[in-house]
Amino acid sequence: MTAAREFSTTFEVDDCDLAGTLDSGQAFRWQLRDGGWEGVIAGRWVRLESPHGDRTRILARTAAEPGNWGWLRHYLGLDDDLVAIVATFPPDDALQAAVRACRGLRLLRQEPWECLASFILSSTKQIVQIRGIVEALCRRFGTPVTVPPGRPPAWSFPSAATLAGRTEAELRECRMGFRAKYLLVTAQRVAAGEVRLAELPKLTLPAARERLMELPGVGRKIADCALLFSGGFVRAFPVDVWILRALRELYFPRRRPRPARLLAFAETHFGPYGGYAQQYLFHHIRTRAGRVRPGPVAVNPGRA
DNA sequence: AGCCAGGCAGAGA
DNA sequence: TCTCTGCATGGC
Image (cartoon, rainbow, N blue to C red; front, side, top):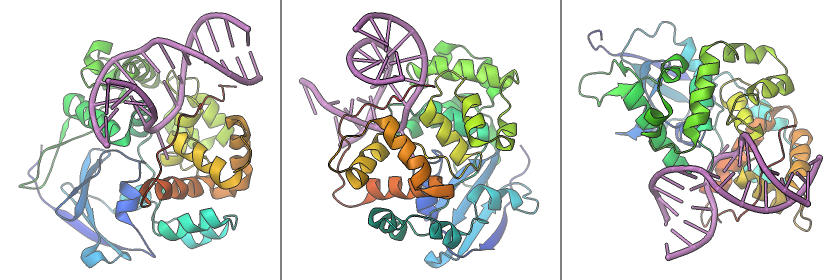
């Protein structure tokens, strides 16, 4: 590790809600410390804060040479025009309420492998548990990254090649249960170049989704999460139990449409930025006061 | 103590 | 094609 220094810059933005963006179930590694969000992006330690709560500015710090900071702008989706995006939404009361509640929430452009691997670990896990598993995985198999003096240690997310060389039993030590086999085999296939994650954005959404769903442990929902949160496929609309229940209550209160029907509805109804609409709905229903827990619902529209 | 979690895969109908 | 079930683990 190089000697720790500190580099900083300030981004001017229309509106950015760091907490909503970094803590809404898109990414699992950001931690709030002393009023700022600390995480690791592509092996770089990063700290982000809104000075004096000013949502039009983001103060960013790193511990390694940051170059022109373009990578961080990209990661945070700072070039997304939220006003224009929201203007494409249908005028539904429920969605508009979510938009008002989630102002400044942006979709991230995460590293493809970290995002895919994290969501493979997400199935039937609560977000707090996913965080724990990912943290354990990084501590055990990641490499230490340079942090500023006085900061707790941080690790990179282990590469596909690194994980491909471990055993299922070793991965299970991170308490990921049956997901270990999925993660291991997927890591091996990605490391072997069988699926080139960096190339997916060149494909259409259906084609990219199809590629990801060839991987074990990756169904429609996890594929859509990976494409939405790392591939920039802002139309992808992941349907989990929360969204499924919300769609039923909000749009089909008297009927009982099957998941496949709701998926088809969501694909067209929310338009070209459906992924943004989805994340606003998801964050809103999970954070509003007196929220209702989702009941038992089957989510299994099949793979083809 | 149960029920359920940002699901998926395999089996049987 | 649709439905049902097992899967590991741990919060609440």
